[in-house]
Image 1 (cartoon, rainbow, N blue to C red):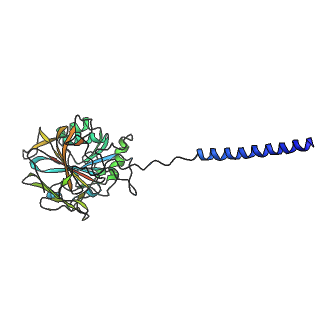
Image 2 (spheres, rainbow, N blue to C red; image 1 turned 135 degrees about the vertical axis):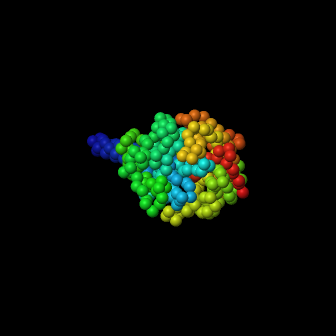
Image 3 (cartoon, one colour; image 1 turned 90 degrees about the vertical axis):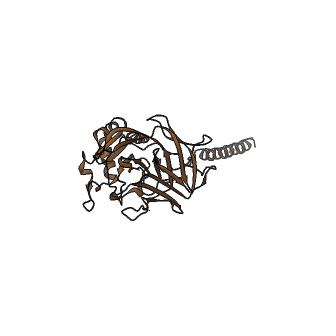
Amino acid sequence: MHARTSALLGALTLSILAACGGGSSGGNAQKSASPPPPPPKPCPLTGKLPEGGQDIGRVTLAMKIDNVDVGRPQAGLDRADLVIEQTVEGGLTRLFAVFQCDKAESVGPVRSARTTDAALLRLFDGAVFGYSGANPKAIAPVAQTSHAVLLSYDDNPTLFHRDNSRPAPHNVFTSTETLVKAGLAKDDSLDAPPAVFTYGALPAAAKPARVLSMRWSPDASAAWNWSPKGWLRTQNGTADVLADHHRVDATNVVALRIKTKDTGIRDVVGNPSPDDVVVGSGKAWVFRDGKVITGTWRRPGLGAPMVLTDAQGGTIALAAGSTWVELLPPNATLVIR
């Protein structure tokens, strides 16, 4: 009898131990579950999530693009993340087009560099810069301070081609992939830029704005009209349409009141070549969602980012998407309706 009782107690003990062991194993399995994947990162220069074929880790490519009537229609601007319109000789303007997440098979007409490009390139913390020639005095500060790989048509003609259906010098074209590949071959440490702007919800201080018109001189004007597709651009009184028949548009338009300084450089007919000063501070207008937010731009030094703030000192957020920046020297006009 005693032996039978001992056997039953032993079996009961083994059963209890087995049950405890099974419960413990289930608990450990739950604790070792994989964490959720991190959210996807947006493109640094648009704030948008990358789409098919876009690369958020790619180096910035900046290019100088013609913006006079004989140079239109341009190609590739609809693929740029960011475009900055700057002043050149004779009261005209030229475009500083920036490609990062997206790419374009044809971009141009590619034109010459200016002193202002040095300070603009520093916003991207290392970039590839494509252009077609430059005055030696203009390209010197770009080479010395921009931290960019410089690729000019004069020094690297095989990276570009001429469209013989257009008049020279308004006929130099290339592709973004060609220049990015050549730039990385010269410096493979180049990578993605920091964000230039902040993206987020429409600020409460925004006021309605349907049209903004700018004039730099009797020969250079532009306007942006709000539409369901975003801001649509007009150049010198006509719709700004690219070679692929795409109307130039933008999610955001940022107008910055700037100062200019004399570089001492003159063009062939004696017009001075201005330097658009993009270090310091000035008035800013941010146009997005059919509205405008008025504030201030500040950039304390060449190696510092540019910050847009409202009247209360808060950062002005842009809508995720492409942006055009309009540099307005003291004599340029801006009318908002």
